[in-house]
Image (cartoon, rainbow, N blue to C red; front, side, top):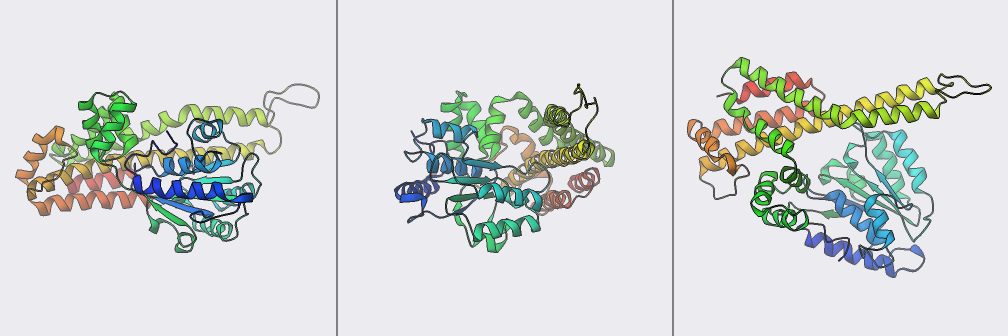
Length: 390
């Protein structure tokens, strides 16, 4: 067993990373050898396991046995507590230049336990232009023992100057059978449920696990896939848009409520609220109000991102629906992601033309672009619903 065993359907990537980790382990004094470099870029479609691959590689670099999967070093990396691993997750809509410069300073430190200090930058494509320029400078002139692991959906999501300085590891979408096998063997999911979840998730491993284990996730999927047959008029389109946006808002609120409260409480304590004793008062000390306002802004940005991601996931479910309709209209011999609602797919395929189906897919993709451009979600989704109705 190694740290790479959990990477489903990524044999080529595992071979590259294993060789690099072995080469890194053979180098004396923390230098770089054949197959090893100071900056890596992990790309691949959503659900392919970009972050999982980067984390496994980090464990292989920090483990004295090249990623055995059972030592303390590997365990600390996999749970995110290793002192030589810095994990960066942009919580808001983007990652600022201020945050990047602070990260670069931390990255310059020497490792405390091994040869390497590893910076794992999830969603590196969310860095602003100024942040990307600062990151480029750090990658161009890296400290001798620092390794950067950047994750992004595609090469084009990062500046070409950053891409040119990284070794690229491209992950692929795992097959339905591979994902189903993982669910059945590692999560003890019945094979029929595992196959359904893997097919519906279209290779997205975390999404497949959620569909297999969470009844709420299955109910949300059913609600989204019921939208096409409900769009019988303008009023129904507006109602469907309102439900979709409201559901995304509720998910964002549920995901952030407890975290926001804990962060706010800790910050207030840090700035002395509730303290007693000589020279102290029960309110925030100087600077506390500004720090609290900055925290609230970050929390709002995080909630907006979660809401947008939730909406985007629903839109991709709709894309898969119309993609299946198009496949049936052309008689394509492909696996249907939504085979469990074949009757609905067949009915729409018979009532419409391939041109109409393509127009509907284009409307969904345009809605995604509008949401990414900060168009009001209700307006963007309403326009899409009107374009989807028969």
